[in-house]
Image (cartoon, rainbow, N blue to C red; front, side, top):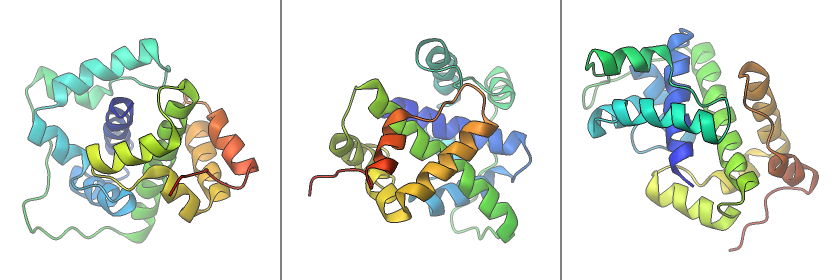
Length: 188
């Protein structure tokens, strides 16, 4: 249940880089601040040697889960040339202009909220289990709790914007249902 979320966030980071929304350091920082990640996607890929696995996994998920999943060209190049991403050094201060930060943040919010809702649509997890799994396995803010705090209508808007920009990623039915029902039902 969490693998498509992790891989999808890595894909989102690389797509932000390819669209020149920021560099690796900026994208990592915005992902961490926006989603509460322990480390950014590029840092995670470097630390785990994850480029080959993610490259393969994205294309496989594109065949079996949804067509949006696809290994970006930058990732293919990184794998072919055994490259690492240019990540921040420990303690390095990264300053990001507010307009750039907002664009990157919206990409991550749309991807994250859309991906977790997609997992619910697949029926392989439930809201409470996936909230727990994301928080503990991915070291990220629990998504459904986050959407309820963010405002479920706001969450739906950022996902709709994301889906409009990314072909092959459709608005998850579970998110539309949650929005019309006043939010995600989470057990305390």
